[in-house]
Length: 138
Image 1 (cartoon, rainbow, N blue to C red):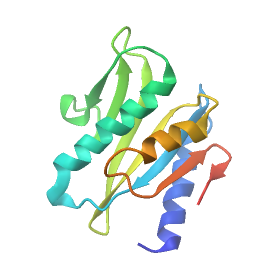
Image 2: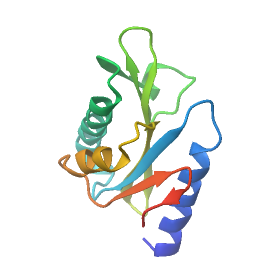
Image 3: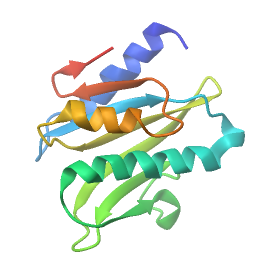
Image 4: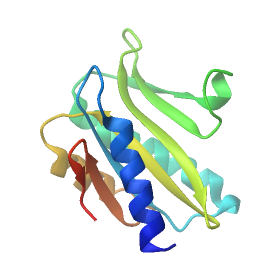
């Protein structure tokens, strides 16, 4: 994957975060997973979502996925609270040049670096690039 293509993905992710009703933060997680490793990608998505939810302090969450509704893309997932379906995180799984990248975003907690470190610690997470409304850390 070229640096230019990755920089474009990071810029598009920054655009997703602006402007909204709430301040969002995010990350792009590059993986080595291909289309034959979707079960590993799914587990990475769940584990990254758990890492984010741990910082959100909104209580227990569940994952609402694209295959649960026609209003949502198949490779799109949301972490919602059990009590009230409040937004905690969202993930889009993108297949690019034969490998998956995850685009994750969540309500900003004020401790973006700690969230990123927890995502980096998830098994299967390759390079993790932090994204905020102000730009990206590539």
